[in-house]
Length: 637
Image (tube, rainbow, N blue to C red; front, side):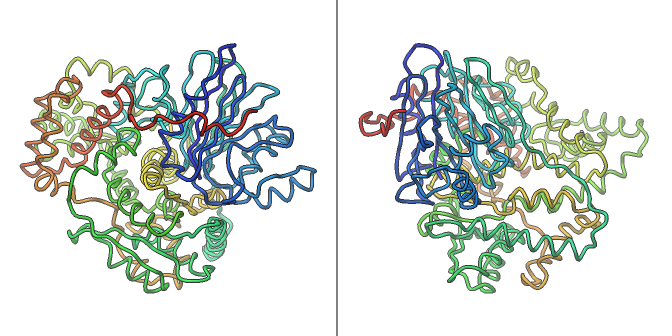
């Protein structure tokens, strides 16, 4: 695990080593154990290393036998030992014992198609000195991030946006389509960052470039939903158990201790159960709880910890010093509306005191239909048969109601149908409500791009079951943009590697063959997964209602953190930024104080304002990045 960065130019102008060193320093939390940089006439590659596999000889950048191929890589390749044996049989010679070098030799044999051989999570950069070409690749589900930007005569890339902001060529200007997406869906879009001109390589994509301005991006993997109608439920249960055990075993490959996040939900509990089968001793588990009973899951986590004899650690989170939020927003790297990033930050801090690697249960809800919103959608689909006149009348009544009035959004929601209705339930600020939040002069910029169009397209890709369409949409939207982004940034904030075995691509491809009726049964979710866990997990864990990883922010924003929120959003800096309408800010704060739960809206606004202060208002995001060039340069190509 590490953070990577690089700069490639195809002009005669020299490539600055210091620029890449600065980029690496900006993401040093991703890899506090080591730094490596390699330079040539046209490219400089850099990395920050968190030593997990091949601790003694796994320093990056890594090269092939004749040093014509160089690799920097963030992530883990779980089948690297198998790949290495095959490569050695074909005559390749290795000088390290880790997983990175397999990528260099695979590139020699397969070029950009090397990605098809990899089982794991990864963001990869390969520089081919002979062809003067760069390959970038991101794992199938988007577990590991990769940003890039076109620069004068070339391309820059990095694991985080903040690293690219170290380059003087990157203008720190807001991407208004990304701002619109943030306040609709809590995150920036799949392919665009919050900064204009800085992009994300999407999950399951690779990109090649051998001359400036000619980046070619291609999807190399996608999940296809084809229900297996011949297998029995018992056969699918057996296959699921086998794949789950194999996925967890593969994710345990490490030269350092491995623990697990344990919420007490069925996904993380299943991972802990499988880990306990093969672990030589008690595994370490980590949980976060709250004093507010409605948000606390510690009793369930304790049940699982007792059942499998784990070395259990937990922390009860209370509203404390808000100064930690500046570090949290810094580590999030972009404005982010999911407030569960706070407990994720804290449980990562707790785990990092004991281990370097944790396994998580992320992905189970998308693969096996665990979200309550799927049940709600099934119920609401009956309304699609309502006459258009009735739906229009309901929408008109809702539209006429003043903002903040109880029932306004519900009536407008009832007027919608199909995919538009489903997305409306997930939107933070619907289009009409953005006029409340933003200044009038900002609104035309936001309307230049439809933040829902890509999400609507995803819902229309899958033909057949609407259940599969929702799964596909969440696997390409909510999972990588929210869940995986949150876990990556918050664990890396504490130099902790998180691995989600449920997102092993073989398990994902299997889940896409499960018939929808074995996933959703009326109001019951995750039917097949629950059947697979019978006899392995306690029934009380399998049968308990799903509880999301939520934070009691509504109460905190009316109590201990009330002054903090008001001070941020009513500050001179926020007003002078010219984005939020002061009257709209006052209205939202007043409505929340009066009992409307607008905590996510306020959290997203606070996150946005803090990000702007950290990354737009300062000449350089941090003054403590200045490195010593001589100590950082490890090799020359």
